Length: 284
Image 1 (cartoon, helix red, strand yellow):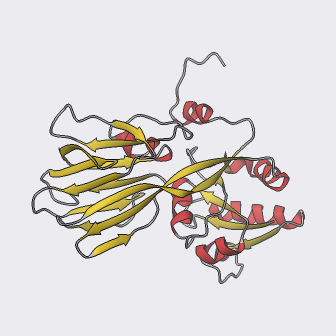
Image 2 (cartoon, rainbow, N blue to C red; image 1 turned 120 degrees about the vertical axis):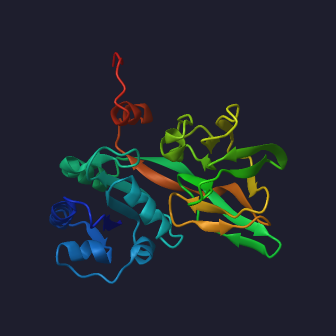
């Protein structure tokens, strides 16, 4: 097994963690490769970017936060590998353990004793008179919004080819179960369990109070377009937006691929929710 090491080089604590992980892996005779910016943190050399690293690795050990995992996915060049996350900072929804437990993480990784949670991805396309343009896959969400304009936008949504409604809002979020704890949650949407087989459509500050979050099957295709002559913007997992003109629509479908996300043995999604959201009242 070849382990690909990626760290968020800008995070305080990244350098000593990478150094400690590399030393431990070397001492145990494990095979590993560095992404080039990660290698530079500890004075090592590597010519591999994220795509090259993913292509040559069997699993990615990502040191950072949830955003680091999203970046690793989007920069992998389509080479989707299992991801094992060590968090630097506060506990994330996607990372396995904190940096102070890196030895436990390495034990679990090398023994293969981790669990894989296969997270849904969305295929995203922009369709219009000029044809269809595929965009990146989404792990968290796809947001259609007004951009920097101050006025609301009108967005028309369809589900499985059937018209749903017209939203007059700041924007619209279509989130996977993984993304239900991100922007959609902040906008008032529900939390979905990772294996729920659902998507959630959440309006952002809707003008009509009856426009609420809607949970749909992840087998449903979703189409969204703007109404009128206003350009809107499509952002995937919070990345740089793509312009969507009034003659175009964004089409979302469940991808046949999933992201295998590592979890520590004995850890459940409710455990993560209780810790991250600081829920109390449990008798366990």
